[in-house]
Length: 233
Image (cartoon, one colour):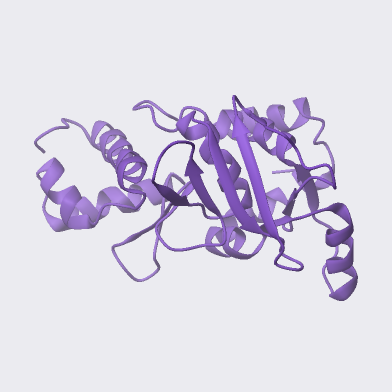
């Protein structure tokens, strides 16, 4: 290993490289770039990615050696687009929550462009200094989480792709629920989603980032008043 003397250091450095690559290029590095960067053979580089997936830092495209997600960033086009203010660069987030969380991860003013899950109405959200700017007067967008917290990691691809979405208003969420068989779930304001994201995303770009423990996450949920069965993990 050319740049890391221990497996733990290698995992930290590969993780940081992936996130920095997303920040600069708005997409993931390929395995060959990781091999070159860290002087690894193919098997060792892929094992590093598998370890990062096991630690819930990234998700691989099933059956491949390619990075699909590095939470909150997506390697593919999604309905959740993020543009940093003053920058000609667009990121794709994995879900509505991740679109908001990019603001915490990068710490920069941003604008989200997405759609109402019910009617495809445009959703525009401007974030600065960890809060929304100029909220709409006709009702604020909601981040809807369909699956309870205990289910999120059973299939994170399914969770992010289909079960964490925007609605343009409470009325549109209610109409959507009436039109189908979906029940339950939790709807958060953008401000609530920002506060929910802080311990999970705020230090994402640092070398020593560590995901909050289960106990820390429970305490954080409780501090935000998220105490229903939906939030049990």
